[in-house]
Length: 428
RNA sequence: GGAGGGGUGGCAGAGUGGUUGAAUGCACCGGUCUUGAAAACCGGCAAGGGUUAGCGCCCUUCGUGGGUUCAAAUCCCACCCCCUCCGCCA
Image (cartoon, rainbow, N blue to C red; front, side, top):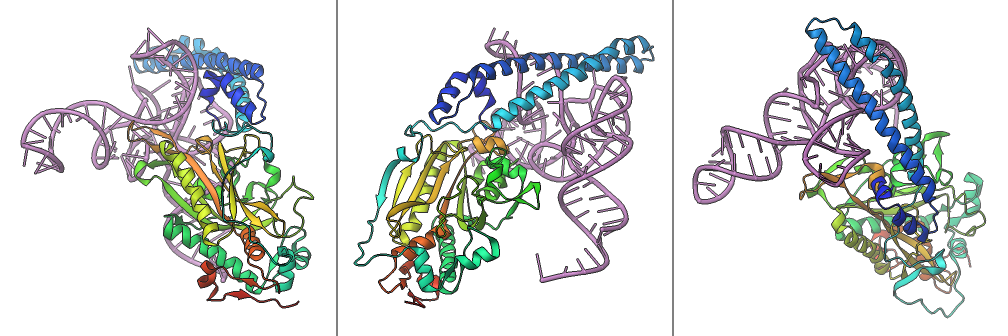
């Protein structure tokens, strides 16, 4: 949520900034709404003041043993007026609130302008795609050859967009998650967390998934107040909702491995082959809760932590700075990490590292006590995948395959695989 | 699921209809004292919102939402959460 104060003081600036990311805010009607709010609120508070003053004097008169009947008559009408004014104020406040909840974050100043992903800016590249002396298979074929990925079985169990993993592939999937967690906790200083996979709507609202993107999430048992998490960002970030964190506890660096559930409502027909886009996938998620002054550096560092996973696995990737139009609703700035997939001959997103400024914090009322002022102030939140486990599995399979369909286990993973160095094909 | 107890400021904890936004303690900030620190003493210290050039003034908030009343932390109703005991259970 944007600062309502900012909308009052610099509406033009906000409108212009939002226009950069393709969001149209009707300045005239918002300003009109705001001025109506102002006059009604002033009127309402005036009535409340009158009531308070008179009630108090009734109390005092009574204490002195005076007759309070005339005073009661005087105050009789105020209650009715107040009720009506309050009702009107509630209505207009709700309307403003609804608009604010639907308004995306302001893009950071250094984002490239652009309408979609074609305008994203490559920041850097690491590694170079391996040259194959045979036609590389994609992970779907490799999964078949290895006898380790079964989409048919998954469809029979759960419908489309699920996968069943087995044997060495299932183990590799587990090894990847363990490896990532251990890297982030031991080397990067994150605290490992275990969190609920089912959260209240208030948590979803806090991080920005609701109310606007309700159709993307699975709700639980038809209950619009309980949702399956679409990412561990939701429970991890909301740990500080309604909290005032002492400065000494910042930055908070949290990591969790969880399943993620997404409806993929808007992506029919997209990535239907393979396990790139699933209703359920595992992800290791990093979250940082930061003091505002340190948040930009924290965002860069966190992006580096995600990159470290790819580097350790020796998977070639590039870092993209998302343009204004491709940056997500709640984010002010996002780096996507895209890993090279030989099966598709292209870079595909495997991590998204975002800086949310105080946008989520304001929704959550997540604050810290600034030692400089002694006052509670909003924190900044940052998160990123470190990494999406399913997509990392895909990347390992495709990048480490051999002519016969076997897949070498990356050096860094072997100790998490009980020393196993190769997944052998079961068919040829 | 049954029975009981409880949700008040950063924390602990008083407060059962009227100058109570809320005693007291801790924490925190400033000062006195001290070579320095601690202790002691003095003073300050809730958040959110509105309005104002500013001093300030005003409103709201005692789990949440309704209700009673001129007036609610305090009375009534519903809901949520936590704790204790019993039952059940991975």
